[in-house]
Amino acid sequence: MINHARTLLLNTSPLSSHAQDAGYEYVPREFTPVRLSNALQVIHRTLFGLNPDQRFLNLRARELLSYIHQTELAEYVHKLDPRVTYWPAIDSNVLQPERQITVTQVAGSSRRLAVTGDFAATNATPRARQQYFVALTSDGDVPALNNLLLIEDGTFFEAEDLSYLALESAVSGPSGVNVVYLQQIGVLSAAITTPVTDFADLPTIALPDTKLKFRFSSAAGNTATATGKWLIDVAVNPPPAIATLLLPLELLGEPVFLELFGVAPEEPYLTFKNLWFDHPLPAYRLAGLVLAYIYRVESSRINNNG
Image (spheres, rainbow, N blue to C red):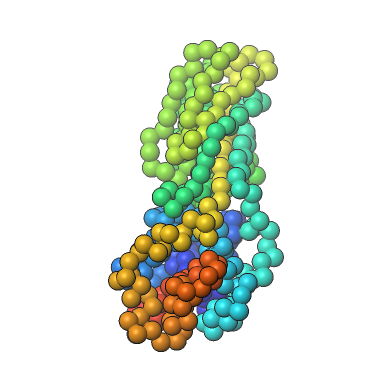
């Protein structure tokens, strides 16, 4: 199985991964996520958080696997399958800035939308990317998001794929602007609508699930009819695993480690155990634990397939 170790480490459906995702790597179409034991679920949750998004998964996996591939331990990856397409890393999609905020106006009169504040992803909230749709519009023109944006399998399409939005009439309802409409893409929640009462001082509005806020600049011409629609895309990188995961992993407890390494470890688990418990370098410790996890998932996959 191509990228065998990485696929087992993430243990997610190939349908959840898309080529445009940051850190994307090939996942065989035939792969079915392995049913994990309780101990392996605890380890996966400690490495990646609960219900991480694809960006968090991809970038965290890349960091963890880099500790293996930069050392002689890479031989254990190649023993599973020598066909590794992600190392050495040559694809620019893994070279991600720490934080990205992209605002794209897709319809209406030219007006700048500014975003300020902070957005972070942690193991407690492993959502490294959020997308929002904003409309400055009239009461009679509050859009239905599902009819407006093209979303497939949770994928957000970039502005060039949404160019048809610009073909919409700037005002299809009653004339004038009196409401700001905010919808978080891919999240089942009610849209936020804010009345506009003073066009000289449009409100500052918080983006859900972040510490970010946005506000509009003034618009040329008559601000009372200067409608518009925007897409906001915010993304961050996970915090470094090597600086944040060692202590949580150490606290997992003896029952988890007994299942991971074995009661009387045999190779390669004995090597992995010695790396985790005895090596002085954090990178080798993480590599040993991650390899043990990958090999246990592979064992479960083989057993599940009979």
